Length: 394
Image (cartoon, rainbow, N blue to C red; front, side, top):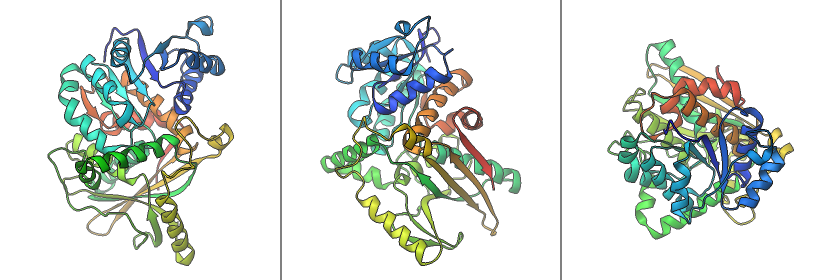
């Protein structure tokens, strides 16, 4: 982090759909923060500034607007020199994020994104971890619905397991109980870009299949594949594959690894959607599985598009975590969000994670982090207070 920087945070991609929501959150809830908006087009940035009423001085004309483009690495390098942290919503990150990560790692500037692209994340870890450690840059991937509720949900559950049993549990199930809200156009675009990358390079397929693809040099035990409808005996209900599990499970294992394996080297974790008991539960699980298969197809939201404010406000999610001990005991916790996952909740999460990192976490060393491993309980409390998340023991 650059302590003498002009800005605390630059919101990069502020004229895009999600970037605009992040900028709106800063404008409404953090007027004291020294922040700026950046993107490819100054006119579009100015339009967003005027629409959301963003200002840092006496009038909106004082709001700093920075033109920076993924196709112009020099503009990215100039941008990151001016701020403590860059918060970027410009994805797919494998198409538009690599030079920005490199610039932040080199300059010692903190970086946060909404990435759900594990193969690209591993490429960035291999390429830039040593540089970030040397410069002091904290590179933090996956600061939205991918994967904060899940990796912090596991962390929160493990704290209760330690309190209750004297140690962590080696088996945790993540089960999405209720969720309303569309996945973002950016998520669909990232999926398409990942599939295209896999078609070009078979090594990408191996990374995508490996549950420990984000823990270089460490491979834990066999993990549940989570790819088919199944009846969960522990919960007495049917489950369907959860489309975000492929990134969330990797981030949970990386968090465990970054923290020094507090959950144990034999830790097993999976995620599914809980659909209920009986024939109806099975039918719903099969319907969800069929819908997952069409994700990324034409006709969904495009990057830059998304639901209305009313739809975002009506959204929510509720995720159950169940920890199982070897002697048959269990512990349960949940994480819930008060807005739709892909936009309303995500925009609040990444904004508050950025502020938690730069304002409350000076002790976090340079390197490539998950939010949970870097900030742990401090981030739980901040998200409770400022981002509408609920963490509860059940």
